[in-house]
Image (cartoon, rainbow, N blue to C red):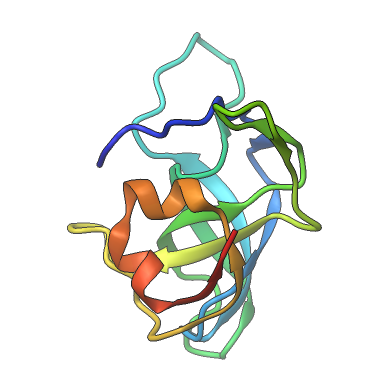
Length: 133
């Protein structure tokens, strides 16, 4: 995992519902934990674009429901700042399911827009994305 060039705010916290934008079978995810989060006692864990999270599948195919899966956040509604000074924000919060060992995507295509910062950190996700913004 490489560093991200943008100054990404971390607005997504525990129990947040995210859309799953790949074709793995899940439709809606709920954030359970943030991988590699180190914080203060009793402080809620937060995540932003490019973070690896652990989620529970809330809606989707019957065999996928109630599974604990790993995902990478590819869009967030709250604005963040890129190094050239532009502010970027999306319509919704979205994630892509990945394998827990090598963080390669589980699906074969991403049907919507993802952030450029995610491709910097996880290049296999950028290969299956249709639009990178």
